[in-house]
Length: 450
Image 1 (cartoon, one colour):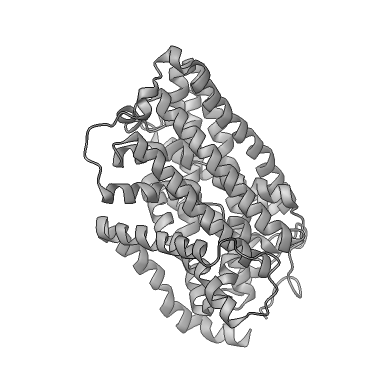
Image 2 (image 1 turned 120 degrees about the horizontal axis):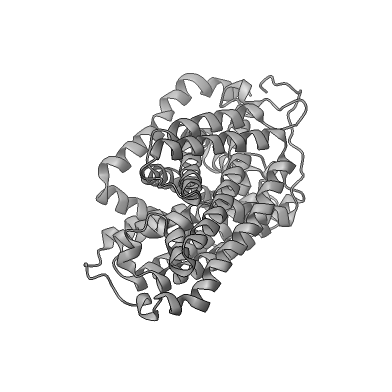
């Protein structure tokens, strides 16, 4: 066992069911629903196909949630997906996930969320974020730093911030949708917008790439598993929170996208970088822009804060297994949080947010993490065969069909990405696999001793 600041570092179980549900919703509903619709509209010239893709994305996510819930209940350990990969496929697979979290996944995720915070902050004060990119990125980096400070101070404080902001963002999206349906017809909204195509051909490759963007918006449903070691009664609360949170997200996203399309024609949405602000401008003018920008800032920061709470636990669990540098496993002597892991995640996120575009950040994130989700879900089949006596308080609904659907769906969109964007996708997977020689050269021996 690695040497740390405490003899056997343990994180207190302080998160109940509803704070866990709020964490799932809070992490997931961040920047995607306010930024992704424009990207989807650029790639898919049919509003019906757009809505269908959001349904498909939700269905894939729900299949994953129904499946990962079994692993979360059976293996309620800090690190979540990392632990499932380790138990199902061995230490190398688990290390590659943690390595990817370090060099690709988490920093790109924090950066993508924070970019939207910075852009909407400027929009709320009447400044064009396109013309003031440096200011937007500086604000984004500051948001990451603040979220890190909150989560170092304590898990309960971080969860409290997420909980309060989650209900605020839920109310904001319902206000946006309600206003669109109630008064949209007086401001140019038409039901025909929901069925009128833009005119370009509908291509399978474009739909596949649009699904990658949609899965960015849905991502976060599994992040609660990273903090499994801090959830009360985890065998019951973890699967319930993941499934309830995912169902709520699907309903919110579909409602919001129908509202966007009702007010904004698809061809206009494709040019709308900040679609929520443009929708509210159409309904309420400048006051609507300020209002929704404030809500988006709350939403983005909530997601940023929740992601900062959950993700560093992966590095903590790796170090505790001897698969990462021992210092990363240190628990703050006063606040009892993995402060070194949080600082590392924040630093990498700040570097990327200052150097990459939103699209580059989010596409890299999805292509890097969703294959690991599929590998984790596939571990269900292996563990049921190898460890039939493992206590499973919750068993995956629809097994084996539901987990198989999830794994095959992820394989399909990754294959489409390899065909449509071979260079970007190839570089992403090359960086993931570069962790293999690091594992064998540095950490394999340590893991054996641990």
